[in-house]
Length: 117
Image (cartoon, rainbow, N blue to C red; front, side):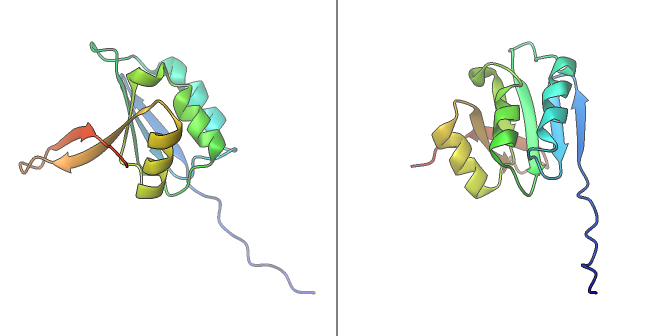
């Protein structure tokens, strides 16, 4: 009998530093509840903004999108680093603030709203 090759589990992690959340790994139906639970640890910035870095998220399903939406009111959650397809989905189908990260030339990253037509 042929045994299928085992697939290592996908690494998933979330780090929360006050108003900044970094997600690494697939954000899907299995991991989304972890992000939602971490929402209690997030402290919005003085401007009332929560920054979510998903540059290291290779896959996100609808459960992941809903978990991002659960982090706060839509106008207070800034999503940074989304891959192009996910950027389009978030921009067109959610009220989240999807930001386009651009380097300012000094090694720092500045963000500006991403507009998709």
